[in-house]
Length: 294
Image (cartoon, rainbow, N blue to C red; front, side, top):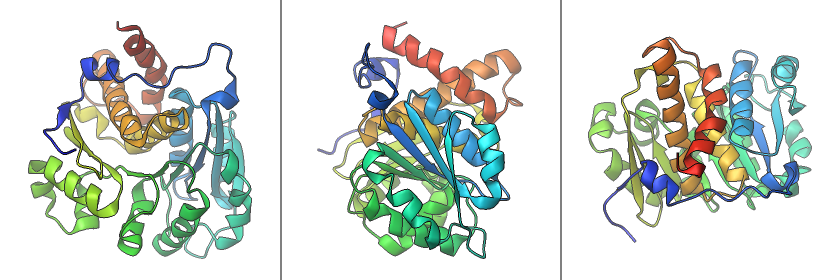
């Protein structure tokens, strides 16, 4: 099904609507997101990602974070159930926490792993063990969790990866500057290789599927290059997936909503200086406007 990349613009999004919100539905009908994120050094990443998932319309949120970060995360996201995971010596999650998450597998509509996590080895190992447990739902790998591609090589389930150019260079061995110039080709090649939807982030974000479909989103928004912005994007995509969007649709809509949130803040505050924590609050109105055709 390969062909030229389609432009992600308002017309495409309106012709590709998200799963409808049931008028008489409740939080269960919009799906539960499980966010495995954060660390003693970066508890805020779990807060940003989890909040963004709710802003994208997910119905329920569970955040699993290392024990040293749990109290901070719980205070930052009072809407979430927070699970304190035992920590490995490097600050990542320990296998002793696995039973706490296994119990959630059947009721989880989307899983996000990675934002703000530390401890490369323990994070990779924990991610590898979680993947087959959550094989029934889309899984988004972000930040350090993406490093498991070196161990897994090819995924056996729906997985979304959201690397920026520097992360993609680390994952593939390509030169960072070449990735920007060949974003679509690189995303397509590695999407097929990994059996994953790949959203290669940048001023031009390339989104590719293993069967050869691709999309391109263009936006010059320097303010989005700020700490925590990628955590928000990952949360938005996970929230949309929990609502029932296919992985490629969740990625395309998530990239577009994240970019438009940056545009809205830039109009009010200037090109740079707005904060990642402010992005999520823009998303509900942007969703409403796109769904109404406004």
